[in-house]
Length: 411
Image 1 (cartoon, one colour):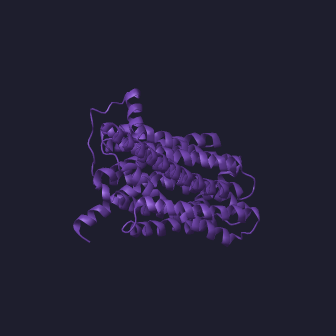
Image 2 (cartoon, helix red, strand yellow):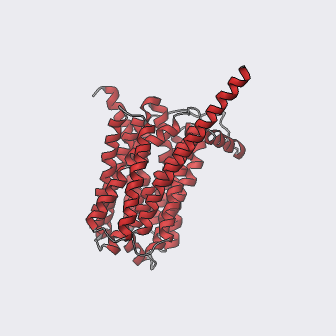
Image 3 (tube, rainbow, N blue to C red):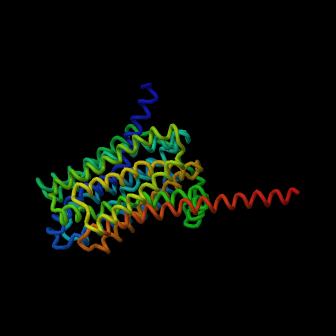
């Protein structure tokens, strides 16, 4: 490995750590749902709303940080966000009601989402366009480790010290990340004084990003596809612990095993990109996820699944996330240089906003079965595939029409 490769690898580790803050925040406290519900005298579906609040907070927060990262550079908004996250994590640890937990989780998300937006924008700043998908794959590989570690850490932390301690651990981890960002992370693209923060200018900037067909199609389809795991995240604690009767620590290990699907897929994606285009990988992945999703729905409806067979089918489905995330992200951001921060914010906002909506739907249709979870996962894949094909068809039709009009004018 050359010095340049070592340097890029070290940067990817820091960027991956930044992007890992939110997945860790989501996954670590999942095994504590029953304990939180019991301690705060509420129900699991009410505790699930704290997850929804977190995802909504990330979606809204990214719309704020995008323009800030373009206007003031990458690091200052990032510092502010991480400090907010640390303070809100302490607030979560000392909360005494589910309503205050929901509010603190929302504030925690507002701070933590700075890491997601900054990491994606810095990838675009530091790496050449033809290396962006590979860089994102490696970052997602780092992110993929967190679901393997986080629930297990959360389960044992809850069992030994109580669920409050999980949020103290999150605060300490983020403090260490903040220190590494300050000392080792490159500044990336500098401040742009011409970037206005007035609402009208910000909205126009967002509009200029959204109207790009490539961004719109791959962000819309990719965001909905990558929201499928949030249905699993929202419903898995109830499905495995209440329906199949596994313990907190057993659930942590199951979650870790299923997270392994992401790691294998990101490694595979790194290899596939040497032979295939991102567009091809996305289409094939959505097709197979749709088929597996239908099998999941049928299996739950006819009560075919044992614990092991359900885990196996979920593993196969979730493998697709390691292929969809980096490729749809790279295609969404590829057209941009100047507005990379805003584009990253819009993409991330939609992904996490869709995740919040999906998790809320699973919670709303909660019926003591696995059907809400698997049905929503299946729906995400199928609808994403429809959006991708219909969107590309419309764009191709418009391009052909434009070519014909130009030929007519010339003749």
